[in-house]
Structure formats: structure tokens, C-alpha cells
Image 1 (cartoon, rainbow, N blue to C red):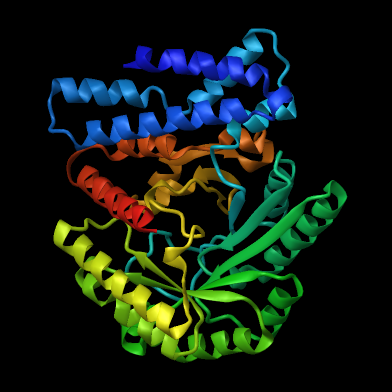
Image 2 (spheres, rainbow, N blue to C red):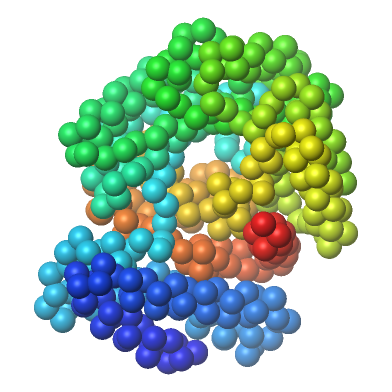
Length: 405
């Protein structure tokens, strides 16, 4: 199997040598074709019935994960001193322009589907600033910094320090930096909203629709309703003119009611709505079909109501289970965000998907991952039993949404 791709990789290597002449266009085309072929080969292999031949084929394909790094090694070994053109051509098709800072594990809620463990950890300003410097030293001219948790607004001083450094670094480097914050909405007080507006944040607010849905899936740590605080926080955002979208999570057992969530959120005045299907849960064919049918109904309603359903745009990256972002945890560990999708043990996830310590990490782009790379490492970690079934169901559900756009 490896030999089938060797010729293509040799062509990619030759094209990379000429990246400074054509901007890397030829290399990008060849690499994209290799990525697509490898992904499809692994998808077929993982979906095949178990057996020694199938297991051998899967193992052989997985060995090719992160082959772009090996191509870089081959270039260097051949005497090439890689320039920015070489590196952009080699890595532009992998990874993301976004870095996520998980600034705290503290949270006021205990959501039924959340994968991030809650405990008393908050990122120091030094770690946050190391993350900013790492992102800003990348080859990209436009980058995005996302703040996540826990509830990131509980660590607002850390967010402030990181934003100040990012803005200064962007001005000095002639880059553009965008800020994104994902919040449960409970800490959107006047101070927080003023800060978000001043620094042109885009905000993602988790809201599962009606009060009953919110209280059932997103209770507070004390078991009480989060609804009143959420409503008042979002209203502050709206009055201040801060751009935001609401994100509702749908569980497999509620698959047929996704359109009801969209209708309820639109009736509340929200203009940008995103539906997330629960990851790390197995979706039967019937549940996946019910979700797609319900989302078709939601799309019709959204167009009629003049609401943007984010799932229908390229802003929503599918399959989500193959998420390519990198996350910096409170202790400075950088891990692949794709691991959060399936792993129930957050600390075990960090071990499985760790890539570096942000304080001494190398070039940002070289840690990027294509959908094939992420699929290969997920299949290696969860390629057996029930977790393999869950991985494949999440993958196929995401692919169906991507193809429907």
C-alpha cells in the first residue's frame, strides 16, 4: 500500500522544489490529491469487516499519517534550505489558522454532554502569552485566537493579557488577528461585554433552545436553572452590538427535533444559529437520518425567517470529529482538539493527543493535521469495539452534512 503513494509523494517533492517559482500551486494540487486518496482508502479499510488482511491494510495506511513532515525531512536531507514558500506550499493544506487557549477548567455548569473535565485550574498569563507568541510567529498573515474553557470569562484577566499581546504583535508583524470566545453566557456582565465589544470579538454562546431543554442538558453545578442568567447575558451582548451566534447541542435521542431548536432560538431573536450533534455518542442510521431530515426542515425555516443557519455555511467545518485546531491547556500542554470529540477521560485524551509544550514548540504550521492525519490518529486510538463504531458514526454523520452544503 505504501508503494502506491510513493510515486505521488516523489512528484510532490519535486513540485515543492519549485515552490518559489509558482507559489507552490503545483505542490498544493498534488498534496491535496494524496490527502483525499489516503482518506478514502482509510475510510474503506476502517469500514471493512475485521480480519487479518483488513487489519494489515489499516495499519499500513495509518503509517502514512503526517507524511508532509517526512517530505520536509526529505527536502532538508537533499540539501534544500526550506524557505517560507516551501513551507507554505507544504503545510498550507493542513492544520488551521486558529489556536485555542483553554484558559480555565472552572465552569458554573455541568452539561450532560461536555467532555472537558471541571477542576480548579486556570492558565497563567505566562502560558497564555507563550500561546499568543507561538500563533503570531506562524507563516500565516491572518490568524484567529479562540478562548475556551470551562468558562473563559471566569479567567477574564488572562484573556485581557493575551488579547493585548496579540494586538501588539499583529501590529508589529503586519498581521490580522481575530478573536473568538465560547461562553455559557452566565458571566456576560457589563464589564465583560464592554471588553468583548472594544476588541471586536465574535462570541459563541451555548444555548440549547427552550428553557426546558437548557435546564435538562445544562444545569448549574448546584443543579439549578441557568436560564435567567443566560437570557440576561445574551441580551447585554445584543444591546451592545457584539456579533454572536448561539450553539445548541442535539443528542441522538432528540434528533428529530433539531428544527424545533432552530425555531425556538429564532423566536428569541437570535439571527445566527448553529446546531451541534453530540460527539462521542453513537448515532444509529435511523437517528442520523432523522437529524438530516430535521435539519432540512430547519434550513427551510431559517430561510423564511431570515436567520443564518451556520451549518449550511463553510464556516462550519465538517466532519467535526476531524477538527484540526490545536489547543493549549492551562499547564501549557498543546494537544489536538480532535481528541476532545471522543475521549471521556480528559487527562487520558491529553496523553493520546499531546503534540508539544507551548513554551518550546517549533514552527506552528508543522503541527498541523489534515483530515486524513486526524482520522489516522483517531482510528489508532479508538479503532476497536464500541469506540470504533462511535468514531465511524460521527465521521459519516459529518460527511453527510458536508456533502449536503
